[in-house]
Image 1 (cartoon, rainbow, N blue to C red):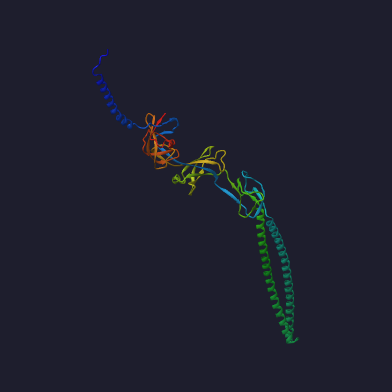
Image 2: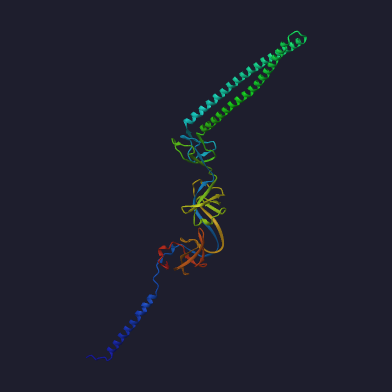
Length: 417
């Protein structure tokens, strides 16, 4: 038969009470402990991150931009007269010299005008020859008249002397003596007048000939101008170099001044680089630069800075100082780097994906064991193409993540695998 155990029920109640008390005390403690725990950090593959270590030392400030090689001197060839494109002799890429004909224009009216002026010159020259003959004939007539009057004067003078001698002897009336003297004086005056007329006729003839010669020279000048315009229908390069562009086609009608072609000297090139306007403020003329043609790097210097910004960029010209590499040609895409300054002793890291000069950015700094990364605020100063200056937030030896971390904007801590 069963023997009842005294106190068993009582001990069971006590144990239950103790357990309930322990559970009641443990629940708040566990809740408080869980509230103190940090949320689990997301895991990131460390091999996918781009990191760098903070260093102290010299830092080279540079700015970079894309651009093209362009000729230092370009000659635009205009149409000097109206015309129609008759024939294109050369195409872009051809080597040309100063007198090389690159295309031919036609203008029938211009050619007709030149021919008409040529015949006008010939007619004027013929008129001048005819005028010379007529003036010379008239001059000979005047000379003949002068000779006749001079003969009459001599005869009248001789008669006057004879009659005066006879009059002194009383052999002729006094009236005859006076008539002979008057006739001799009249002949003398006529001779003097005719000699003056002869002299004046010479000056008049010279003036008429000079006037006709002026007209001929005017016609010759007009003809030379028209002939030059006709010759200019054969368009020449005007300088040695390479034909860069042909801006017209056969059959096209052109007005005077229209651009026909462009000639450049390929051995004299410069680089036109587009620098972002936010970085161009420190660029100055004379600064050292390098131009990467993707087939070699050429040293150069900044030679010109465009005063205006276009589409957020400032155009900077770089004069090339080294020999051009093989394949360098106008319009070749290049990358230019301008050296702004050399900082002697600064904290710096490689340039992160985001970060403007003199701004506050957030970066993930790795823990010493490299297993975690914590977000920190970093103030950066001057920036370069590949590096940035650190003003606050980091010290030498700190390792930070430079990759684009926008996917983790809501996280302050990452776990690295």
